[in-house]
Length: 333
Ligand SMILES: [Zn+2]
Ligand SMILES: [Zn+2]
Image 1 (cartoon, rainbow, N blue to C red):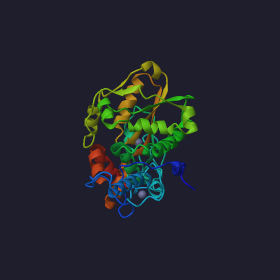
Image 2 (cartoon, helix red, strand yellow):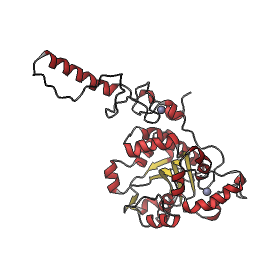
Image 3 (spheres, rainbow, N blue to C red):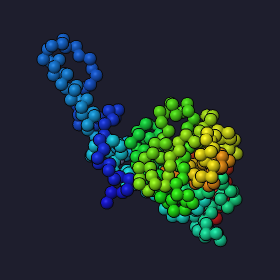
Image 4 (spheres, rainbow, N blue to C red):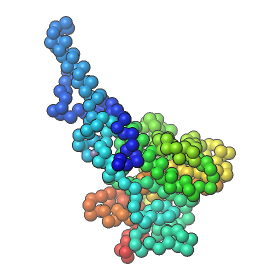
């Protein structure tokens, strides 16, 4: 059976003429200027040939943008079903508070029934809980990059279905019948440059699921990013917090006061952005803030995957401060 997020894919039509045509399948002769005088038969033949080539570039499937194998079906999303099938939800034990993977030493729940990672044993977050659909690596990471950096907007549909799974996990614990769904905003300059806020597109797609539509109300303009911030990569935990201080503001506090809020983002990496947004929303009067993301960096898992050459450099950069502590914990396991 097709996975939940693949439903309806076959109805879509792939029409991105940016995608290259596979060599050997279609004669590529598009933009060479004709030296044949107008009106001649050869000119007409050339015109027909060029027209056919451009038609093929619109209607023939391209290669999968993740594994580069030929796509067999026409689709708006240039990713093959096999690559999509490989994207799976996070399995195993995760921290009840932040969603980080917890290893065998932390299997036990605390007296309140919650399982806490080493960080959440020590730190109180401004958000209530953070949940994610999948691990930020492999195909899921590439799919997010396709949307974010390559502007492949149909990827938002699949990512939205994954986010709606996360929202389904949050829904039973919500205290209010309808809660605000607030996407992490981009600074207006970056939004203009990218042309869209990927998190907003993903949130809109998630709300196509009937359950999500009933319980969540999209509130895109309530939280804004009032200043640009430099990349968080390579910064210590303290530097990350400083970098984001004062970067977000609530524009209409009266709409947030007393409301339960689910903050949504594409990726949860260190949690600094989610924490800062949650802090600002709480200060504006939100009764409780949840965090729901499509993906999450599983740092402890990365320790074990480094041998396969998997994301270790990023892991080092992103988690410098907690790394030493976690490394010590990892060695104990
Ligand atoms: Zn593929
Ligand atoms: Zn945790």
